[in-house]
Image 1: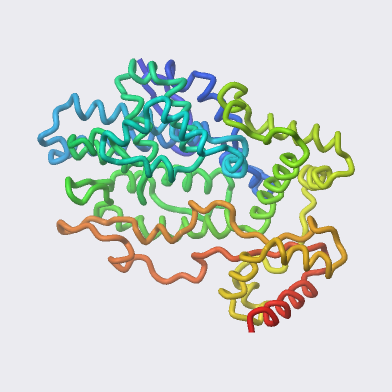
Image 2: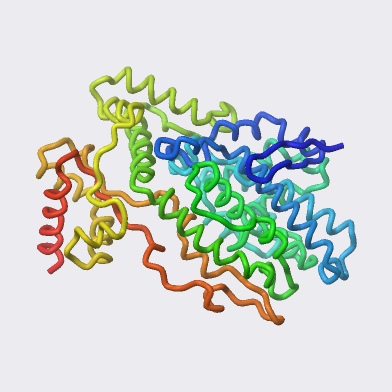
Length: 457
């Protein structure tokens, strides 16, 4: 028995009923319906209200489709029985569904309030550290993982341990897949187990493939135009080369590369998107300063199931209780969408308006952002929170990773960069933005240029 869910990106997504009963229709999984994928970007692109919930379903759909396609290739099934492949597929399906379950409210913006040391200790208590060490992987991946990844593993081991066993998936292996590893493979198991982990964490993982396609469609940016089905059909693998795209992808990889860069530049790095998200981040910092407890804690997510709405209500109440505070001012700006002006909107304007080495000037701005904000605010005669120096807040969108996409041809796997499919691009790195009150753009730019020359020459 199966359940079909209609998705605006992939059409009908089909899930085995046990997956629905034991994972999807649970309180922990349903919480993702209320955590937006792009945090505050909906203030710029009104359609960007999609959530971690539908993204997780999309990743499941792509992961399952790719793996089932690979199972049709004789070399992939050679020397591996159907039972082992079923185990990999079920593990992959569960990991795809659960990979984002640890995201706190507002996703990456609130993640820094989660204590990674505490998360590590809790995972150690539940045996995950021992599993990684016993497999020869070591504890480094757990030490280096982000807070939402660690919290996701904790939720898996706390809420889904028995359901996963009932589904035929080892919960520790599911956690390993979520972090990009396979315990079975590292212990000497078939190479296909390692491939399952790569499908969820690699330069061509299905996580990226879904959120890039979904973010483009749901924002309405429409800067990405490529054949997703062709891309999915192009996945291939080899015991020594690992996961790659076959030559079938050559007709679509160019559009994928260009589209991902365009999405990065005009959605993630859009000057108003950057401001909307750092404004929300600043509100959380002010909330943290005004309340006795952090805005987000591990137990609030585990037991309180807090989400975007919960935290936004805390912001509203606290801003009302402290009506003369910086938080109250920032909250009013957020609710009314009162955005300041930026001294430049994109790299072309940056180059046109700044008479200095752009890379050096940009690095100087970012490295000294807090000091320069205070100095510029004093020069303009405005409160410090009316001047902002910021750049993109979503590092995983950085297009540099595109150079590592592997293309398999003629028995060799090489990256798109090595094949010459990824040229030099002036727009593939973020620039800092300087936000100031209306009417102060030119004055602010000239002041910062003069200060830069004084401090660096």
